[in-house]
Length: 592
Image (cartoon, rainbow, N blue to C red):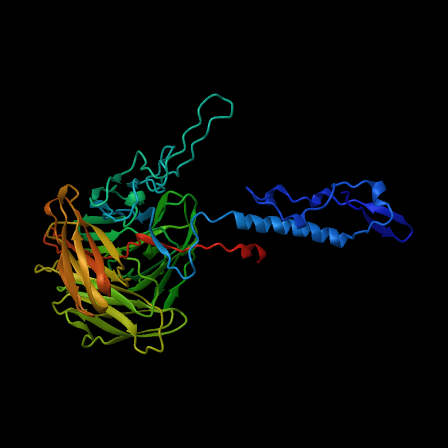
């Protein structure tokens, strides 16, 4: 059957035949795969090029451009819709309303700050992955001074001790040269120069960090079966008068926003922010300081460039414009990502890392006040938009109560307020809660608490607590020592039951487990269950079995030279699993 020719008319000449352009044939990208073919109704009849003579034959009906365009559009839509129908999802479609499934994470990364800054001492890094129940296998866990340890470096590190040259990709051999191409590095394998490696879940790995004024930060990565729950603890002991104390922290993931409350540039305080860039591109960072008069503007604190694979420290006294007794510090990353930490040293009165706070919220819970607290100072920041009126409550062995003489605190908008709480714990362990005095007037805040312990000889050490989130299903802290670790567990809601497990030691031992009951709103102190036959350091894992939510902190106390040295770290939900939403086929998406 021959296809009729279409004619176009002109006002001053006879009708001429019009041939359809070949462009109406669907492009290859729309050609359906497999057995799909457009329905016959959409197939153009006859030859693609009808004869001109036949096109002029009388009695044939003539088409129009509109008809031609509609025909081509129909062909394209049929092809696209057909592809959507025949290319099924990778997995079976689920019915609507099915809950997302849970999958284990496959990669976890953390950043540790420079171990020491102008101090002499001993720093230890401990990495651990709790044993899991998932199906993940293989993988590796490692720590490296190379600040971007995701792939093994192929060039020598920079001569600058505080910066490591980023790994450069292997250069393939020229095409046709006959030489084999350099193999691509395995992103899931530890680099050859890793400082520390974790070989299997359930057993911690520990080793010394690089010491000295120019020591770089550390990047930590775990993949495969070692990724879920992977955590790293950094612990430093300084015995000299300048910076005397025990400093510890749990290394955190790289990010773009960090809050710290409780810093200072007054008296003997020497506080600094550590910035470590483990990414392959430069980061630009602003450091914002807030005092009792509001924000402290200083151009030197803005636009700080942190090169890839490098570490920097910023002394707060250089950007605070004079001595400020109580500070809140906000680290904002304009581009890229960094690991940020803040170290505080108060002469011979103590030193520690000030942990990053939970995000600003109307209610903040700070776990971990020891029973023998000799002094405590609360520092609170309120946003520029509104004042904050807050209730101060303690969680004791029987629940929440208001401490006499320290019932509340008022914080002006955009400023920092502080109050000395003294021996607030009265020989009982506690957690502290700040909440709105008026539930109808919530203001998001950031809070920090300095805690001091003093020995009989008058020597002391200090630690800083901060607003913390519940531990969720599971949380772990590494680097625990025999007879030195105590857990503080606070149930902020209903009564709760948790399981506490002491892992095998880094050099051997059998794990130990203890079940702990926590009253509603109460706090209990639990000596860490130590593995039988312990050799080396061990990790502590806390799992919520019922009730709660629960916030937790670990105190590591190592008296040294008659100084009651200690450090406190809040436990964080390890987020070892993620929710994977169900996907269902929706061919109509091509029409939206």
